[in-house]
Amino acid sequence: MLFSSTLSECATGLRCTRWLTTRRHTSNTAGRPNETKRHGRVILSGIQPTGVPHLGNYLGALSNWVKLQKTADAQDTLFFTIVGWHALTLPQNPKELSASRMDMLATLLAIGIDPKRSVVFHQDDNQCHTELAWILSCITPVGKLRRMTTWKSRLATSRNANDESEVDESMLNAGLFTYPILQAADILIYRATHVPVGEDQTQHLELTRDIADSFNRTFDPKKRFFPLPSQLNTPSQRVLSLKDPSSKMSKSSPDISSRILLTDTYSQVKAKIRGAVTDSIQGITYDPSARPGASNLLSILAACTNEDVKDVVKRYEGKGHGDLKKDVADAVEEVLKGPRAELERIKGEREYLESVAKDGAMRAKETSKETLKQVRSMIGLC
Image 1 (cartoon, rainbow, N blue to C red):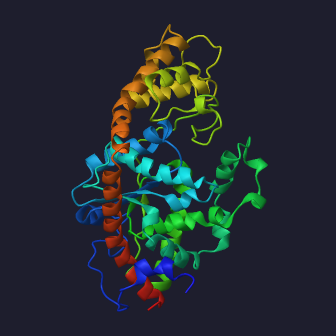
Image 2 (spheres, one colour):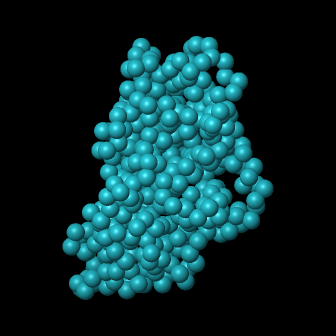
Image 3 (cartoon, rainbow, N blue to C red):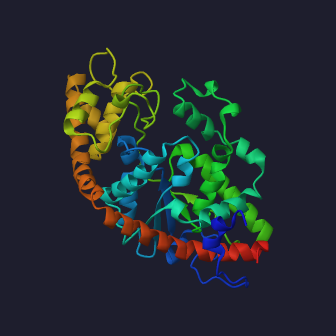
């Protein structure tokens, strides 16, 4: 009875009879373009509700979600989720986390995610994720999890360590160690065929494919119930810290001037760009190894203006860092001013946000309950 509240929402009322799915993705269509095109893709991506998104989040992921929504075929289904359970793998202030959940939802709507076209929801509103994660954890070897390296970088960042060598397993909780399985469940519960992820998450997507393949071979060798999700390559920009261009821009950095937030005013943007680390070399050239600071600013400018960085750098012959920083600040403001104003407006509409979250959770459950019904039947939990 201890775990009944966790399982009841997805398990109650599910008749345990074997049945043939009527869902479009009855087999592994990922990697088979003709099948995927005919039936439509299922695309899923998520973001943690930990603090205000910064420019790196926007240029590297969120803006691509909007582009995916605009360019997706009518048959495609898009799921965008705010992954609250993943946030718990590191210590959180409960009040701040509660506020961040709603702020992140407002952010997604402000940047242009349409809740009528895409399914936008809080992961922690759908208990099917955690039930499937437990089932998948029972077929996932510990050795595969030990090969996952992301936990070290996350611990290092959260503890403001200089590098990963300063953290070890004595600091590792079970949730952070096993969260790649929950991430796999986030994807597989909707039988997603495509997942837009950054380079730092490629390893986890490969694990998801391994877990899906293991489940299929164990419980459904003929039909291959779970598609093996493909990595969806979208143009993304790796934005580096303004104060330490050897590392990514991060929400957890103790130096607030190292990042530009979506809520920053134009004055704040200018001040942060003006204080960005560059070098003492005369002129402007693009050389990420030798001149990481200047190259980071050039990359940001290129991403904001949708240009190739090689074309951007040509405009700075005979110019200095001051010229570059002014143009970067103006370009960033042009990109952020619309979403910033919309975010301020939407954040005050509590009832609307709650309505969007409720509707998104309902639509997500319609799909996930069907998946879980079949999984429970296949593994004998009925």
